[in-house]
Image 1 (cartoon, each protein chain N blue to C red):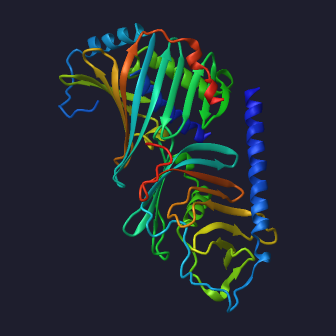
Image 2 (cartoon, rainbow over the protein chains, first blue to last red):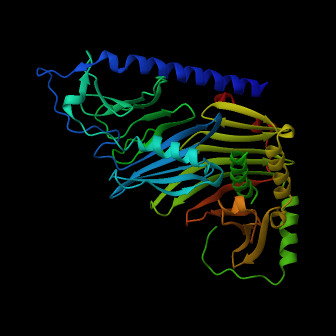
Image 3 (cartoon, chains in turn yellow, purple):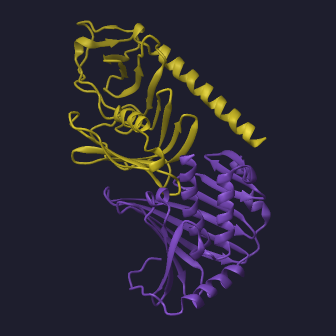
Length: 225
Length: 218
């Protein structure tokens, strides 16, 4: 009975999540945007998810891999030349430890991945999806579009970035052709804050959800540690 | 399947911790290993309930960070368990009457132990551990050491899948009480997780309802 409820719960959650993805994907699709005009004030030189002042954050985490779900805690730390992302179970067992150099030309480093997760395709998707948090396109104002409610849009390759007037990215959509399937990253945070409060990534096969527990830089404890 | 393996390893970590400090005074091999083992076995057999707080510290060496969790652990013979994290996140594992329940952020999922080989294995481990047979666990080699204050049971994984995730499990028993006071799980790459048990009550009355989902968890 409980298992049925569990399955139903997952189904409901999945449907709910996909609906949100589709709705957010539709509402923020590129079509509602127009090119910047001379009258539009635009002074954003770079866009970000983790701001300049970001130092370290701990997130409650849920991963789904091909229908399987695991949960735990993820720590994201800004080092001198890179970001380090370590995920582990509630019991302390490490799932993976990735490093993303600031220099996009350098390769990501997989310091550790738990053997059962060490599948080429899975690792590739995880590194790519989490890397999207740190590798954002340079801003070229001629390619920036704006919506009626002053949301900016910037397209690079198959990815479309939506950001606010401070340059903080809150959504990334992948436009896969021939099907535009709403594979997106949704980031929420307080405008101007250097650390996102929540992040949801769904590429259709794997998904990650991060909910902020603690942000060391701003000492913004949402829940005491 | 392999993810299940990880769950199993995670639970080994939990279980060994639960039913069982680190000082650097030197540990040596005792001469009377069988006698000590028997003392630990006898103590475990006379333990009907355990109630304890715990502090879990995840040490990430390269990041110079420690993630600290606090929670409560309950055990009642034969194999009822409550392992509850209160901070930094709400997460509880319950084992009661053949049902394994995970309550994650208020969402409860039940698993029938008999219908699932993973949970059957966990159940077997509980029984083994509660009997005090730490040194006889399948897939682990073991050695027993001691210093002035503690007996140290060191478990060394023999299975390749396990050893890729854990290099050893150190269980510290107080020489005075014979209770487990601390467990450390060492991982490849110098990271480790320690679990320290505090305010431990042994053989106090624990109602069965404590092993069910509490109202505020529904």
